[in-house]
Image 1 (tube, rainbow, N blue to C red):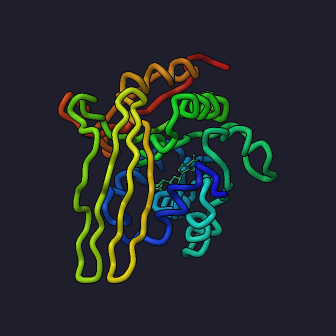
Image 2 (spheres, rainbow, N blue to C red):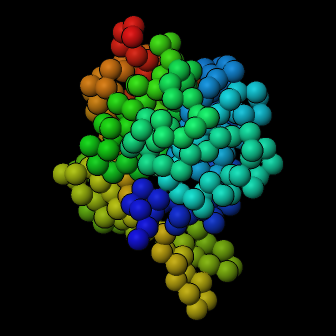
Length: 255
Ligand SMILES: C[S@@+](CC[C@H](N)C(=O)[O-])C[C@H]1O[C@@H](n2cnc3c(N)ncnc32)[C@H](O)[C@@H]1O
């Protein structure tokens, strides 16, 4: 049976680069991460097909990437420069244990651990999110940082219980997005439904959204304090109108 943590990556690996490769400010993120990481080591949680890890490694930073999906990691490894990123197939909820079990991968002392584009929210229970943050805290160098990008959720009462949207249309296919919202659990379960002549393909996903304040509280419980919060990787100010955030956490005190 497919491991729960691998579900998203296995469902999206074949289309991820086509659908999302150009959708983000990759250059801005890599510039920020290089400034934070220097020579490294840097650790990406949910490294996927290497959108960020590959260009970051190309700047000379030592990069380790964790991902639960073998199909995502295969695609990363097949790209030019793929061998420059050390990959570990594991659930990021247990990242510290996973790295400790692999030879040749730094077990601590990371200058930056980063998790981009809502990937942290793929951990769809509070328990898993907390475990991940505790693991990150144990991996950071004493002056290292966790950089985490996520969307700012709308107030729960404004999120409909179910929704159906058109995500993509081409002459060959239409992709619909269907969602169900569990406000108590702060969980949205979705399906990208790809309709082609004679076939239907379901691509499931699930996120547990958190407000920036909830994230700060969970991070604090893991010994991480908010150092900076921007609305994007380029450092544009975060305010009450921002629909996403890049938050930088540092260890609370000396180890
Ligand atoms: C939205 S993609 C982001 C990929 C890449 N970081 C980027 O920004 O393009 C999310 C990635 O996280 C991985 N992922 C999801 N849940 C995970 C988990 N619990 N542990 C490890 N990887 C996970 C997926 O397999 C996928 O590759």
